[in-house]
Length: 385
Length: 114
Image 1 (spheres, chains in turn orange, purple):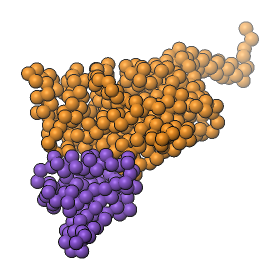
Image 2: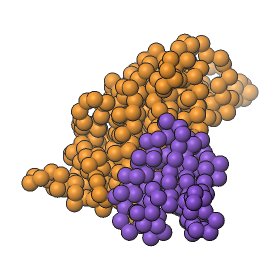
Image 3: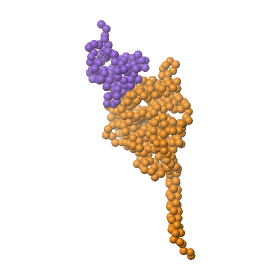
Image 4: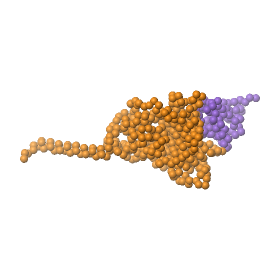
């Protein structure tokens, strides 16, 4: 057998090592591909990066609306919250060219102002607490209308995504006010919201009817109701010395929208606080709440049990509504509801922890239990024109 | 002899966007309006004017908590009594949309206890 030259021998060793490395890399790639399933694009300050994404990303419902897909949306929001606050968040894995915990907004085909606000509030809280580290995934795959709504709301700014491509969306699409947030009772912010909404209605020729009466809602009354809701969040949502499942930043978030197609004006205020059912036993009027149930009070109201959250909100509203001869305190919820009676047609919905309360003008007060908590209190006024 | 009147226009002298109840909760509160504007003027009753009129015109709207603290708060703090309300202190507006707040103030004052 011919003896190999030293140089040839060295070349063969090097070649076999390189080939082994290539094979190991290829096998690792196949393993990642098998585990992670697909490549996604991450957006950050105008830059994009392609990484492998875990199959287990949070898939959101196509109809991301709190009006006709309530249960699925609150469940999805709960998953989003869990993902945003799980220990193994985006950051560490992205550096290795893959993400394991992520939220796929591309599946959304329709989004309502209230659902968009809760989504944005969750991201805002996570961003505030983490400082940075949140990135947007596959923005190019998002539905143009959904992307436009989220951009108008200010959601893309939370993720440092630059909206540099003009979107083609319907002229009669949803018009949403940029998200506003604060800790105090901010009168000028409430005024700004009503001013912007008035402008939107005026642009659409929907501000007033022939006689000069407001078509959708009297904005003076709306302004007052928004202040009451801010005050409620300020006074009751974030008590001190409370242990929280998820950390809080003591804020409220607010937006408003006009939907010309659905002929609907929406105003919504959300906080991530303890909720009405939890704060209820600390009300100075709690004895009246218990008395309102006659001989059979649901004792669990005092036991922090979400099973009775529908009853708790109903009771809080009823006591607030019927309070007479007492100081004003506690009447805030009633004033929040009274706005609906000044609209031609409208609806108030209050989601608080696991309860949903609805009052439609001229209709009954209804309440029901949600499958999971909404993570605070959401007050939504809708007026139809 | 005709009563001399001191008029306070909330929009011009205080805020177009009034806030909530307490000063600690944010600017333009009912407490701030009462203590900084209304009480000093009411203390001057009989010294150059016999009545105080608060004009609501030009204001964006009100939260009930603002009105309660500003006006019913006068009763609770003992600044004036219920009988003097409507006689020495009047609330007025020429804006139809704001007239509901005149009635609300009357309701809160009626329910207030010194």
